[in-house]
Length: 102
Image 1 (cartoon, rainbow, N blue to C red):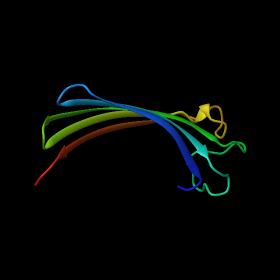
Image 2: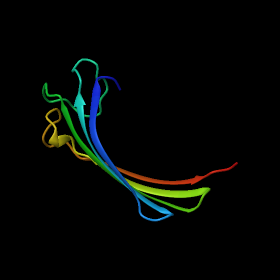
Image 3: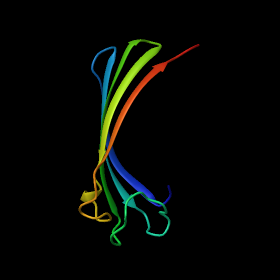
Image 4: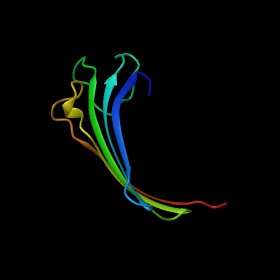
């Protein structure tokens, strides 16, 4: 998607040899009002701030070739100035398993 800028901060910690944690916070800003087409939120005004997103995940790798991850995210368009103040919060849940084959 063009015309979109992201300001963010990330934190990652390796809790032990098999467990890791990441957290991030981002804020989405429109670079201009003409290039964003098909955005899934109804535009109420001419604002540029779409809103913040918060995401956290935990990864567990019991072996070098196997990793399980779980993540949770939330996007709050009502905290920006583009969407209506009653715009619903968007939620995201991720589960993944990765097996590396050589």
